Image (cartoon, rainbow, N blue to C red; front, top):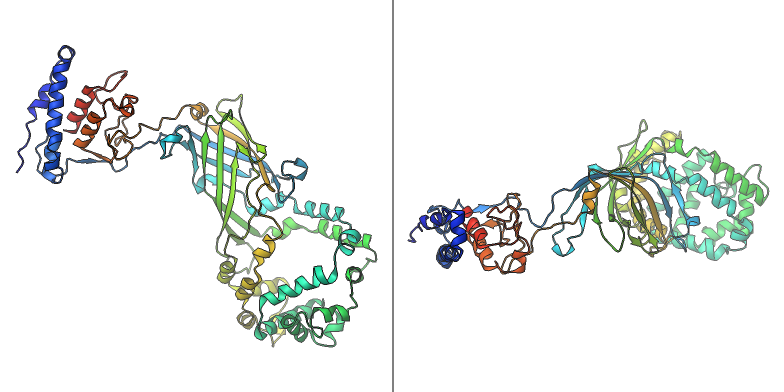
Length: 560
């Protein structure tokens, strides 16, 4: 059994007065080193036993409870230097344009309220000391306030956007003369219907639904409904869309449509009070302007949540403060506040790849300007390198999670259709037979929509103005101290287990043992130790300029 080491030697050394220490530095060094090395030389005998740990700490204890372990060690991490809020009031957006830096291509998003309100702590939490100039702007989901997506949609002024597009549209030049009926309209439609891979049961169910709707709203041409019957014709068309008997070509033939001019003329002829192409254009614009979109969407809510973690670098190529806000996931929770509406669908996670930054982003450069008002600043955050990809969420899973029977019953009620008037059609039977989930899966609707927008970086832009308020803005620009690097032979960077400013866990193993004394003594002359006198000031010197043997002694005594 290993005998306890007498504590009197070390305590005797510590009793030496300050004057005696100065006079007898060399003698003291030798004695301290001797004491330390006696303990260190025994480490192979004692480090594997609990009793040995007690002996190594100079306590003579038989148990291992004297090993000091930190539950939450403080590694190369700076304390909070400033809390902040960031509010974006307006933003500009452009999707799939040749020159996203041209402000003429931008659509301004302004909802009359903050677009994003972000609050959190400006902290240093980067594990790699090599990037010690970076700080971290962190905010949890409850600190990121994003408006309802319905408000965002309305803030983009979709009606105005559609009206502008219609006014710029030349129906004769852009549709009639530019498109081929067969290649640009019929063939893509045939391909899409074939892609659904509907069986007879599904086609029959959809045909019955269309027949019910036509009975209520009379939108199928009489040439079809009177001769063939709506349900049967729709069923055959869905199963054989390219057929010359019941398919799309036959439908166009019976309606006298041979080209795009005939198609536009047929549309004009179906609208009361419209007889010319200019009148058609005016009619379409009037219909859009008359639509009370805000009223229609009033019962609908798309609540959003997001978590953002960004970086702040106070000195990057002359930029006062570089901030990056990568936004990777937004959770949207649909809510329908209408009497009789079915249960709300489950939340949906949208995977995004948007990184707003005040630094350079493609050809756009953001700015950060300190305000005349203390602790406030403004910034323009931009991103023109993100990809506009809307396919990264589970649409099939979302549809599968819906109560489709309740949803269709609600829609029928809103359309004032009484299903009991149609004994051959029931909503539950339709849902079972139609198998909507397989239709959505085969349709690949997201891919179809996504194909309309390139996901090529550099063709989109988001540019938003931020107003920022800091508790202490100056602290953001101060140098960041992430603690000392690993000492020679250490397991990792030293840590400060009790947060008192000195790093007792010298060898970085997240424990306080005699091996920390060994690590400090062994690396006493190293740059890692000598460049951090404050971190290893165990002797309590007022303004230490270097780490000395007395700091080794003090750490030894502290651990004993």
